[in-house]
Length: 412
Image (tube, rainbow, N blue to C red; front, side):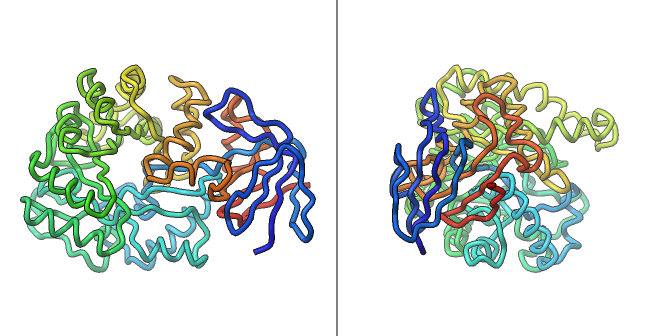
């Protein structure tokens, strides 16, 4: 692969107050070899002139579901995995065109989809997959109706890749080992109720401390970690005491739980956009099932307050979106919602440096620095000043590079 130079750009590092002006990036073999103050002259190098654009590390979304292509999850039982994969391919391509060069899948995707992206059969962000999320029987991942006594078959339908029921320490241990065998990068578990699950209250604790500790133990053996779907403060505390590293949503947190997360060095990935959108597009929730409408209203009202509690406790916040069905086009709106309670710099810090740390890729992703993977986007305005430059489905992104390969080029 020839050397590439991206010159005359203002490099944004969210850990610094001001961009590095008029810099040049030297890229070799998919990595950044040098961040130079003056444009080097290298024979046979491919040169892109940024002409004063702003260079930002490739964005990272740490809570995605590109395979959950319908809001009504039960409807996915009638969708074959081939159709699901074709739909997911379009979703992944659109994510990349919005500047998201890496995503963490929070249940649904498998090693086949991840490998298709790695091989270039599908154009999309690099994927860090969880495989099937672990749920107790009757937990958040159990979307069966009360009259359905059949255990879903992990075989043909698109829904089969979302959840695995595991109960008891021995069953859970075997399930975690199997998920890693199948290529999971991290393990996701459900430790509280959720918006879309019909049979469990939102703050219902799920999994015993011993069961959660077993998942954490097995993940540590693989030098990996556990991410936990958790809304209620008590469920959050149980998960943290058991060693869970990443709390997803965390909306109904209290001060005690937030201080525990900080003491444990855990991360939290808030997700604001989905409940706001669903309520707006469904007559304030009137068109939704009563349990879902009640849960969404509560989460929407508490979401911004929760971020304030987490931040005041000093907890590192990641960036995630948790979109489903026909809502993926709202991915970048999460920046605007987060900016209602945080500075644009802090939000971008979550979507770059903090998310890279969550993925155990600190210094490799989320930064434009020597030795980092060459994921970057060139923006026609400074998103630290105005996050609308990341809106409009990537219209303001004039160059997108993933691991040194240009996937979009509108430079003149």
